[in-house]
Length: 330
Image (tube, rainbow, N blue to C red):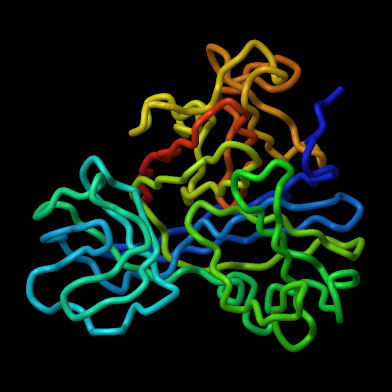
């Protein structure tokens, strides 16, 4: 018997996904992904944008502190990145590390997290992008075609799982017919889908629904925090990874920790994938990756545009999943 997801019962298999096709470009090639949402009879779909918004600024950090990253000269427009933007390190030992931007002057940005351990002043390159939002991903007027409704009881629901909760803590949004709302009917169109964040979608109708998301292909490494407890993590590569090549296990990551291995899913940390079973199939690491039935799973693919539900069991420390860079052919 398949091991069922203990924190979110009835998760659905993620439907077949058409891979992102990159177009020739100097940087950040354009791509698109077609995502199919499962019908209500199959429970949930686990998805993620994978693609990102265009680069707004790229430069080399000249100096850094616990709260700021500075650049030579005045290359920025003051106030341009007041909210809704993130900065990512794109080279060196800190490649893939990112944080939110809280403001900027003409020569520096203020950041939400201390990035000094990931920055080598004078050599670390960074990119600034706008977050993909709910309206970016699903369309400001619901071009994705989710079922609208006056409340979350009748509308299709999009679940944001807050990392580390046990049981999982969720934020829900839905399309009310005129705009995106949360459960308290606050506007949610601008809610960011942060890098590495996966989503669960519950359909309320018995038919599947497909939509296309267009964006820019992220070609470098990605650093995604996996907290103790429940996490829904996106697959950031436009061509996916195998479990063995993904780095999800994490033992060689920058802080030296990762998923706990074990002889079975009862003792090991678990990564639930949803392309076969609507309840999710548990995968765990022993000397190699296995599924719940002890079938070898090193070659199991984490598909682009999907998400994995990872249970990082206590006692454990959060760690950074460093997803490798993947070359995209033009």
